[in-house]
Amino acid sequence: MLLVPVNEHKVTIRGMKYFIKTEKDLDFVNRVVDVLNNKMQDIEKVAKAPDTQKLAVMAAFSFAAESMELREDNEGCESKVDELINKITIE
Image 1 (cartoon, rainbow, N blue to C red):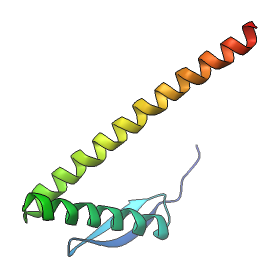
Image 2 (tube, rainbow, N blue to C red):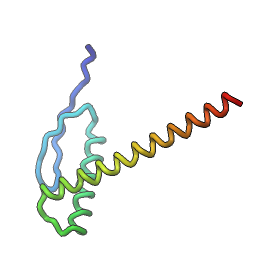
Image 3 (cartoon, rainbow, N blue to C red):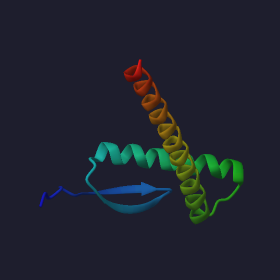
Image 4 (tube, rainbow, N blue to C red):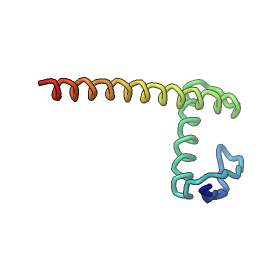
C-alpha cells in the first residue's frame, strides 16, 4: 500500500480560519483559496448576499457548473480525436 503524504495547511476564507488536509503543497492551496475568495466576493457584489454560507453554496454551484462544462468539452474533444484517428487508420 502506497502512503501519500498529507499536509495540513491553515487558510483564511472570508475571514474564517480553516485547517485543510491535502496532498497538495501550500502554494497550490493558497491559489485555490484566492480563487474561492475572489469568486465569493464577485458573487456578493452581484447577488447582494452577505451571508457567507449562501455565498459558499453559490460559489460551489458555480465551480461545479464550470467543472461539468469542462468535462463535457473534454468528452467532446476525445470523441473528435477518436473520429480523426479512426479516419486516419481507415484511409
